[in-house]
Image (cartoon, rainbow, N blue to C red; front, side):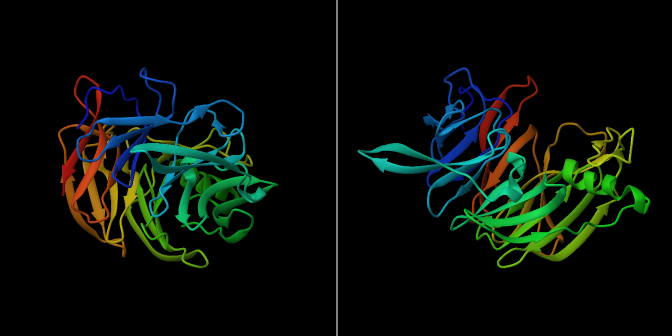
Length: 314
């Protein structure tokens, strides 16, 4: 679709008739970039870097969209604020309004890649540590916390080192929400545990599938408050990214040990059962799937390590 725009290893999503990518580029100083779904042409870039109103601090390690309202959301961890970008048409051009929000204090320290819009100004975030309390998942609106969830699948660490198990999910976990905002899926790399939750009201666990048992590099000290674990490079890396539709959970997937470039997208149904596997010649960095489950878009890396925007049929 587009191999002339200079991409880095950013993220991809879509809104209205546009693909949206995040990341630094030599073309301009903006963090977000719109492309035509039909042609792949660059339409415009937006967002300002800085510490003032409507400005964010790089890197953009995660963002989400409300496709019904044509909005893009970025939680700026370093400035403890949510920035909303509203896209609209004016005189046949795309304009963007920007607004900042301060959210409930429980999610103050959440990482931007762990923050998602559920629609209707409700949000889901994961792995926030503040006020000596650790929250695994938190559902909020602009003003209040709606629901929290703090249970984890059990691994093999002794009970006194349970924080190491929690760190495995926090450091090596990925999650994404269903298109309608009523469910979400969470999965891990360095092994593969897939969990499916309902979040239409309270956050409720529906299903857990253990495909590969976790293998990770533990911290040097296990008795710290917030231990840090890393992927074992010789492990099966499992699921490294997720994109959801109303019908399927799509994942960048690896079932081979020591793989560090990923060429497969695996689809699971909302019961956690595998249903499809797609293979690609180029390495997949980030991807998104249309709601009709017929077409996808991705940032992919070729053998020369150049990154291009591509589309593919399912």
